[in-house]
Image 1 (cartoon, rainbow, N blue to C red):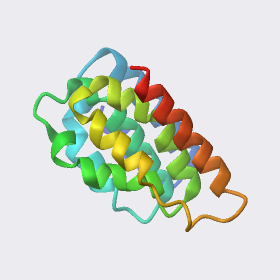
Image 2 (image 1 turned 135 degrees about the vertical axis):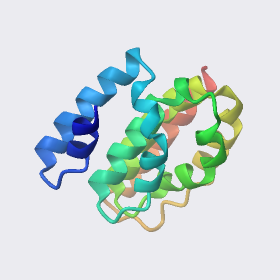
Image 3 (image 1 turned 45 degrees about the vertical axis):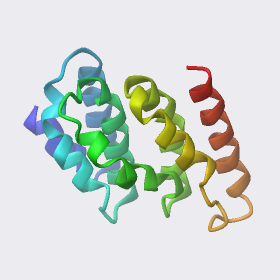
Image 4 (image 1 turned 90 degrees about the horizontal axis):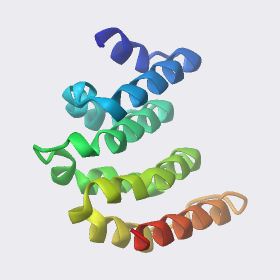
Length: 145
């Protein structure tokens, strides 16, 4: 497991993505990846957008194992990535928010509020409509839960 976690943060994007896929698969069946939740939360501040995207994906994938409330305690920090500086990171994160809301129903109001209050003005004219469409889809999906 430690090898996969170390590879997750590889600057080689292909290796990092492969590790992410394996860790996501493990997360679906076991709480063993949850042990690294603090590290994932820490990586949210990393300057590398790939690292932030991987961390956000693993946080959402491990929400069902979060009995100690680490996600709840860091929800504002996590949700700030709805408007991540990199629109592709924001889009990837927004798309997984319905899963997070499903796994953490107590956080559904916070997630919806963050989505509805997201300021997309900082994105380019070509990216803004895409992010806004993702937000609309996520809100609709969460409301359907």
